[in-house]
Image (cartoon, rainbow, N blue to C red; front, side, top):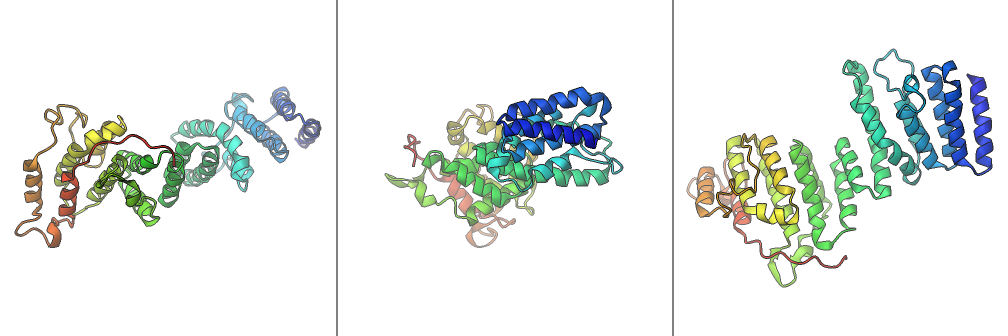
Length: 374
């Protein structure tokens, strides 16, 4: 094996000195293909990562990524493919070797590699055998989170903000997620800035991650990313911009979902009213919102209704709810009247019902054209 390593190193370095990294890549691939009958799976892995390190040290990051994805997609042969340890007795793990290769790299260097291999790693992860031992799963989870951490930096550097956000969500780091959303949103239209935070919050809720959604809202507030005064209409300060209204909706829903002392049925009814009040506005900004709201209704508020929020059947003909429904919820919660649950008309769960009702009853105002980039 040492003879193969020396031979590979010398020939790859010759190509690299000649300024021919692509030829060096092809040589590594052809070398392993020629020797594969004499190689064990671990031997092939050693040679692939040796070649990857030589290419990387020469600054040929795209070719490094191409070699690794070739290895992951069985270019070396099905019996010599990228191996993830699934049992303690297995002697090596290519995921660990990959992390050793990538850790410590600047995002500018790791990005070309990660952009090529991330999808292949995800596919290998999905196809792990179901009989993987629990002890090994713990180690694997730690390693895959290390990889997601590298991916988050690499994707952001490449401008793939959605990919970076997905990786950060897997890391459950909502402070980092809020910062990424800020960096992403500042590249768009000013009056759409709050919409980036609203979409992310709703997606977390739809995936059943209510605690993470609450942490994201808290982190965004603490960092003072959304300064409401910046988004008020210059001609009418009483009406916030539509994207800010979407953010208000998200903060109300997150707080509603977090009320552990309130019956689920009560929260579901309040959520239904919130949706009726906001769905038309939300749909104007993104036609995918009604589907998200329907999923949130099922996942977070345990609704068994199959109809989609925003459809004519769910809106009772399309009209906004009148004071009767709001009064019914207000009475049910004990808000605003005798025995109203404390100062401010809060219900028994501690919810600021008066503030919620003010938000529900506040007119939204007409939408406005998108301004130029700030």
